[in-house]
Amino acid sequence: MTDHHAGEPEPLSLEEVAERLCDPASYTTVYHRPLHDQPMPAVKVLREVMERLRAVLFPGYFGNSDITPESMRFHVGANLDAVSRLLADQIRRGYCFFCDREQVEGCQACEDRAKNLAGRFLAALPRIRSYLADDVQAAFEGDPAARSPGETIFCYPSITAMTHYRVAHELHHLGVELIPRIITEMAHSATGIDIHPGAEIGRRFFIDHGTGTVIGETCVIGDNVRLYQGVTLGAKSFPKDASGNIIKGIARHPVVEDEVTIYSGATILGRVTIGRGAVVGGNVWLTRDVPAGARVLQGRAREGVFEYGAGI
Image 1 (cartoon, rainbow, N blue to C red):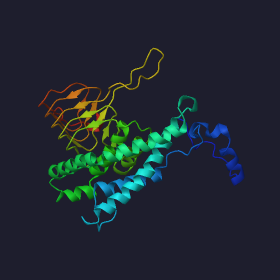
Image 2 (image 1 turned 60 degrees about the vertical axis):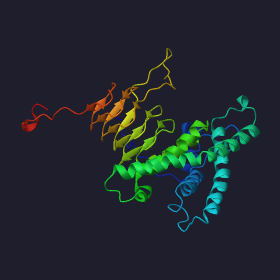
Image 3 (image 1 turned 135 degrees about the horizontal axis):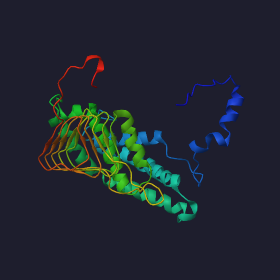
Image 4 (image 1 turned 90 degrees about the vertical axis):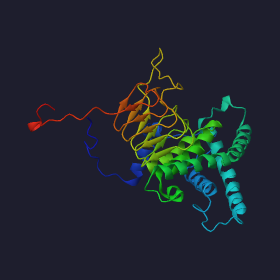
């Protein structure tokens, strides 16, 4: 193991530190400049987009708490107008991040496409709200500690993560580059719940407690599924082609059918299917299919006394 503290450097002047940090050999692997010289997506702006969307999707809970049915039209309209402009610009920047100038039809075409996709995304908001309303109800019904659905909207990490996921998933389906991943990572950093925007998740989904839960890109999750904290729906080791390059884009994460419950700390890897109504116990490690209605639990704990660590 390398000791990164070995050879502590002598103090330098600010000018000398700046000079070293501006040496191309120092920053090549951590610096990016789009070929079009366009600015990259801005996390700060995307946070504003998400806050405005939360105010639209859950009126009264976020944003202006004094909103009434009479004023809602103006409140929603003002937020949608801002989201439309901000999101279209961020979508365009996402294209620019990956763009190779010689392979696109032109910057104006990307700008027009970004505006079009922002408009199509806004049209999906009633459907997204419908899904989130079901998620909220599932959280309320699934946790006896919740005193009202509103408490889950305000307080539950599952609802925060699902709001970001449902927005990001819609953008992902529309073909938006980079932005969906940034949006789900915002929720990941706040809740500890890591959901890839490419995952397919049905209605009434609830993650109890949540922290440490991971849902991979090609997961397919049905309706009325509940996970607990620390569940991993991940992939096994990645297959490689004849040249040794990782093969991407293949289905490599679990399929979880309707009405499944997976308890805390369970790890399920690979393209396996957890059948309808199955229950997977805590800390179970699974790399095979589970039939519908099955109960998969850990073996009984071994009882015994080990003196001074003997036998362990």
